[in-house]
Length: 253
Image (cartoon, rainbow, N blue to C red; front, side, top):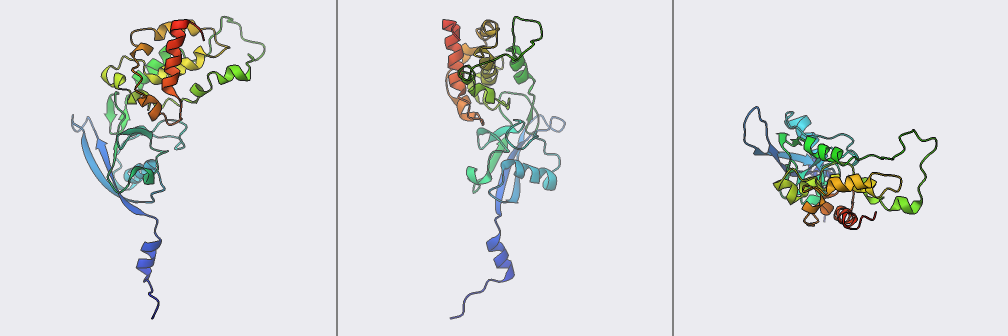
């Protein structure tokens, strides 16, 4: 019996890594309509590529008006946080093959912040909360130091986890309390306060604790763990918030 031979087209198809994927993107342009709509795009894409690659293909090849943020594309800058299949993720870290490409991949802006256009939201309230917790080292000595401020490895370990925050807002915009009341500081601001409250070199822990003792501070947290689940850096956000609450009660940090 003769061995079956694939023609060139069939061989090329069999060797191709590409699959057909539907991207269902939530579109919003305030200059066109006050209502957001969903738009589908069909893509030929390697399932090992990322959602960000798919958005690039749409913008570069299909619709140049699609608007979204991205910068480093390596999970460091935090610019491309968005809701992908209903969960907050970084588009540059989310592989097509990991989110069931046999069904439409839904992409929409993160919740709780005003949408400016398509997948871009107004980040100013988020960054204002971050600024409000004074996310920088404060000491009583106003003179410029003449040598580095030494710290033991054990002291550094105390706040190591919360140094990983990249300010992507994935945790804050996954929080139901933040969705319902944008006045809440939110998990990211509390995480960045934690990073300095427990830093042995810092001398402004009391000030930060009083800021977070406000009615819009840590006591608004309902411990749903959404923030921890959403963090692309694996920070134990809920644990950090609990430690700030404990420091407020005990004044030990």
